[in-house]
Length: 252
Image 1 (cartoon, rainbow, N blue to C red):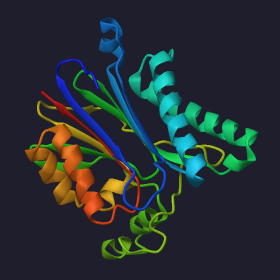
Image 2 (cartoon, helix red, strand yellow):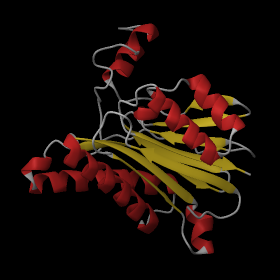
Image 3 (cartoon, rainbow, N blue to C red):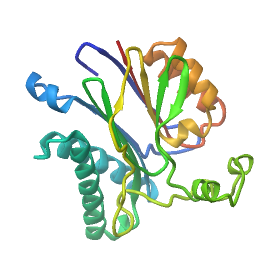
Image 4 (cartoon, rainbow, N blue to C red):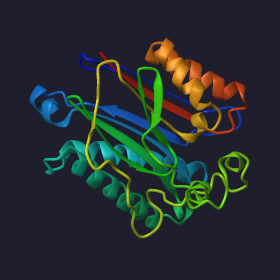
């Protein structure tokens, strides 16, 4: 994956150990034109589809392709607004595709994307894929899960130690393509980045099997490519019940 100087990027998606199809999708994009690059920066997206092997794959791929296309071609000046516009268009297109094919009805996808413009990070998020910032060896989760268990934790209905084994831990409360509207999470202001910061984007097939401590240590001591391989292998060593996708970007 070719990138301009100043960023080391690696991506990896794996079937896992128990699935027959990979319903995750991901993409990285940056414009070829230098002037456009100054304004639009770099875009990375991951999506984890649902709705059966066919519907899940179609939903996640359509979300990733739509977000890349809309972000790169939008008339919006602000990167955050471009990204939000792209999410809403992905939601519309997934629903439109499902309406044309009864076999695809109910399909949807998680979707988490970040944009790097200069030294600023923008992002949008729906579902339970995650975006982390690793700075000076300290891992910080930037997104919040749109799941029933996360809601129960936020309201105090359950405690943290009950979340991991909760029977409804995979139930989403929001997904792109599902419901009348989506309300993506996004930061009020872009996140300022520092030299050597690392951004990690992944589906729940990774974070569901790998601890925060491991996601903090491995990218801190390995190159992005080696860290992707090590993290995915660790998830597989623990059973790999879901598809696993990770993208890691490190600043110079």
